[in-house]
Length: 312
Ligand code: MN
Image (cartoon, rainbow, N blue to C red):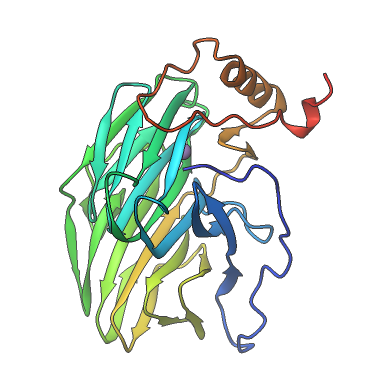
């Protein structure tokens, strides 16, 4: 999907209605619109830009889509990141400049690696009618791979882990010794947790930082209460986290080694310098061949130049 074109009000990022004993950093998402669909953007936020290499988290829906009101994002470019598309309900058709054409369904992973440049489109109109609920996340690629060739993977089957009161699906990385087959260029983890009432403990890597995003239900963790629309940052240097649940919960556990380098993100580009972004955007606007064509009935998305290069 598409990132923010213009930075909007980023005020009030930390929830104020939590008890002082709360050892959880609560970050309120903000509403954004993507391809005609309202999403809740949990990352990046002013209070927190990244969790490990995870640099973008959009919680999409739940909402209904039909032919008139879908989630339709026309061809647009990416560099320097992986997109992780994960659905709870509904279907989205992905097409990209590698020629991939893949319907993503709940419980399946669409993983697109942009590297030096890829373009893709995402569409529900003509594909799916009914409820749509899911997430799209971005993983910043490290300098070692971010200038390499783009790639696409679809994983219909992913490994599971039994928890004390529930189960987890390992989307990327490893949890409790169980490893996803999905490509990863850094040490990071993404897992979906389906929890039932009770207390579940998860082992964490003390060298990694973690966050939880609840998609359905609510969970109490370290004195704070997490509900959809809010990211709970768990920090680093913890070897476990305890989740108290009194209703069915669906949540994402995101983690990874702290990045250790500053990202520069603008529109759909993740880079390190303005020049890299300016060059990529020039190529997209001029359609000079760096980004190959995408088969899609949707219109190619073109936005204004980055603010630092306007008027040139
Ligand atoms: Mn996209």
